[in-house]
Length: 120
Image 1 (cartoon, rainbow, N blue to C red):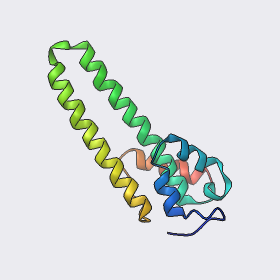
Image 2 (cartoon, rainbow, N blue to C red):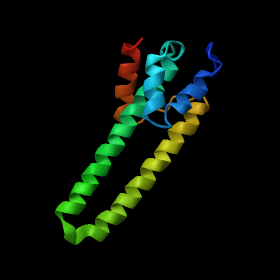
Image 3 (cartoon, one colour):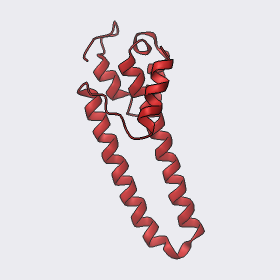
Image 4 (cartoon, helix red, strand yellow):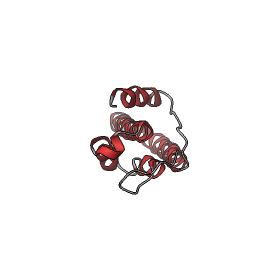
């Protein structure tokens, strides 16, 4: 899936760039050559849902850490492991999007697919 848009940016590159932050993901859903591509829409939506899930997990672990101060060390370790896992998943989808693969993450992948098919 390396079709090139009139902008000169391939769908693969746009799909990968969508994972950099929320900004490119949102821009790709708005700007015409990219929003026409189901591949780019899928990765943009999955990126948005991924970053939302990341924030929610971070907040929940932080709440547990603040509510139960006696488990600060445990929560700090869990937070580091969760952050490492999230980072690994992020790198995995980022690299695969550049490679033209549509990796569908559990839960959010289905939501992204629904949104991408509606947004055409």
